[in-house]
Length: 514
Ligand SMILES: [Zn+2]
Image (cartoon, rainbow, N blue to C red; front, side):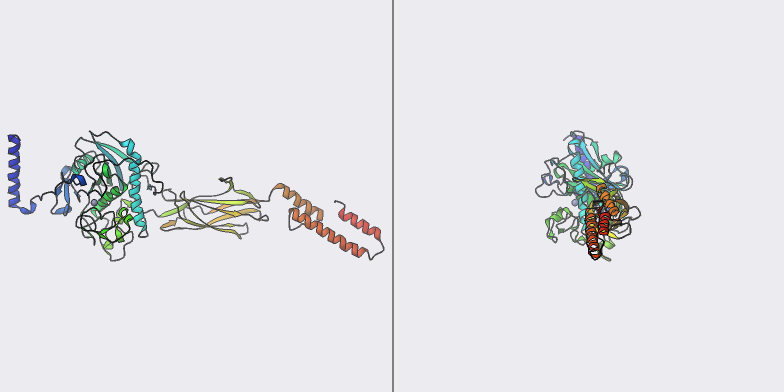
C-alpha cells in the first residue's frame, strides 16, 4: 500500500465518520457480502434507505439519475453461474411464437440485447437463435399466466419483418460486465436509455444469475413509474433461459411490490410455486402445489398479475403488472381467406366450379390483428343451395396454422347455379371475430355432371316424348318399363277388337327407335 493511497483512504474514512456522526439517517448502510457461487454480487450498488428506491438498492446513472434494483437474484438450485448454458440445439416447436404488434418498433417495447465485454469474444451468431427462443419462452410465460385469469397478455418486443424479436449486439468496455452498475452506465451512454424501452440484456459473463431494476410504486394508475422506461434486466450466461429472462422482465414491469399480500419484503413473494417466489432465500409456503408454477406468474393471481382482478381486491386497487403498457392483449381474430376447392391427392386445389355429385372442400384461414395464425378457434359455417336451403351445416376447429377445413358432398341431383358458403360464428375466448374486416361469404357454381350423363338424359327424354324427372340410366330404365307397360295395356285393349293389323301398326310406331 503506498502512502498516497493510505492518505486518501484515511480522508474518505474521516469524512464518512463526520457525515455519519452529524446525520445518521444519511449514513450508508453496508452492503451484504458477495456470494459469487450464487451469483450474488453487490458491488456497485448502494443501499437505499429512503426515496424512490427504499427497501432496495440504488444505481447511479449519468446526470444524477438513478435506477432502483431489488439486488441480485440468487441462482436457482442446480444452476451453476460459473458455467455458460449451451446454445439450444433445437427450438421448441410447441411454444407460442412471439406476436408482432404494429410496425415492430414504435411505442413501448422490450428490446433484447446481447452484450459482451471488449475482452470477451462475441458469441452472437452462436446464440442468436437461442436468445430469440428464450425471449419467446418468456413471452409464453406471460401468455400462459394470463390464460389462467381468462385473458391474454403478450410481451411487445421490438420485432423484425418475420415477427422475431430483434437481438442487438452491444460491445461493452473490458469492465462493462463487471457490475450491474457498469453495464447500465455503459448501455445508457450508448443511447439505450429510452423511456419507451425495457431492456432484456443477455450478458456474456458469469458473475450474476439475474438482476433487474424496479420502481417502488404500487399506485394503480397508468402513471405508475413502472409503466415507463428505461428499465434493465441482466441475465448472465450461467442462467440464460426463458424463466430467468421472464423473472427479470417482471421486475422491470413492477412486480412484486412490497405492499402485496404475499410480499417477502424484498420484491418477491412467499406463496410458491411461482416464478417470482423462489429467489429470496426466505420462508416459502407451497400454496400452489404444481411445480410448473415456477414458470408462471402469480400463484392465485392475488399479488402482482391478474388480467381481470375482482373489484376491491388488492390488484384492483394497487399496481397490477397485467396493466403494464409494455404488454399487450391480442383481441381479434378475422377470416383472412375463405376458399372452396377440391382435394387432389391430399393437396387442396382452389376452384369455384363444381359438378353435381362432387365434394366441395371449404378452407378458412383465421388470423389475429397481427396476421399471426389463430389456432383452436371454432368456426361454424354453412353451404347453401341457390334457393337458400342449407345443404351442409359444418363446424371445424382451426389448426396450428389457423386453418379450419370441412367438406360438403353435392348430391347427384344438386340444383345447378350459384351456391353460397357462409361463415356464421368464430369463437375462441378471448378472441372476438372482427366482422368488419372478415370475409364471411363465398359464392361458387354447380354445373350439370359429366357430359356423358347429360347426353343419355336428353336422349331418354326425347325418346319418351316427355321430360323425365330422373336423368341417366335410371331414367332410361324407367322409360323402357313405362313403354312395356303401355304395350301391355294396348295389347290387352286391342285383343278385344277385331283389327290385329292396327295393333301391329301401333306397336311398330312405339318401338321403331329401338
Ligand atoms: Zn428477482
